Image (cartoon, rainbow, N blue to C red; front, side, top):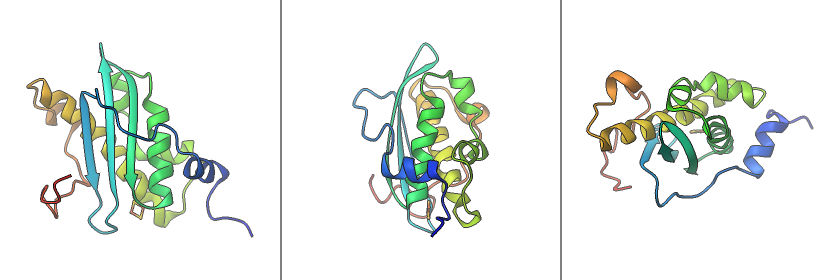
Length: 148
Ligand code: FES
């Protein structure tokens, strides 16, 4: 039976890249989708404007895992400017597509990267909003009450 998922999605779901935590991360972002309950946490280690290392933890569906895995691959070794330009569309394209009902999972991946970059700026006393923009899929429902 043909899968509704591309081979690349299946590969990144079965063998996600860059899974884990980064103890020396200087940008950590977490986003959640209140509708499906999925949570994604992104760790960035940024040095001289370059994303030296990136790891993620995702508590969510297969597409959420595959998109966060692909997102980390797309920004690793890149500049902050390039990472800021990462769109969920680019993640979907790099995975050779996603079924329409799963596209929102890729939005979570884009937002997780942006949340981590926002945290990076905040730690330096810089207001991230003019640079990173507003996060759409923030975990507004729990308002941090989940304590993660
Ligand atoms: Fe929620 Fe995939 S179903 S991120």
